[in-house]
Length: 171
Picture (cartoon, helix red, strand yellow):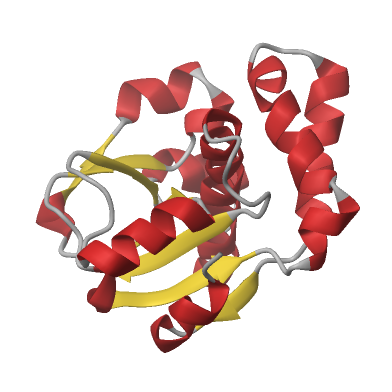
């Protein structure tokens, strides 16, 4: 199963140095039954893009918790055996932000990543990502103005990086 793990540049630097991506259990996003139902599509590429965008939005929450990290969303894509993934079924029906959420039960080796997706350098200059990170908690609580700000982050396309390029991304 392809999973998308939200992170930050600071956490990616730590993962790159240590060789593992966070500690288990680790939250990620994937094409789950609830995401399929919500997205109303059978096109696997569209569904995977939707899961990637859910992870990118979750990266905003991590940025909100780490004010020292550069204001760029980061998502690591990995292929993992289905048995290492636990669906978060209850959460998916209770909160839209949890659509596609899964829990990974084993540590992930960064060397096994398929790719890294990150905002371009200009995202920091344009401050859209920073504003979205500041607004994400209010958006999750139902604030429509904050939701508009968070949705504005999606105007920035995430760039694709091979895992060999991780060092060039790091602060």
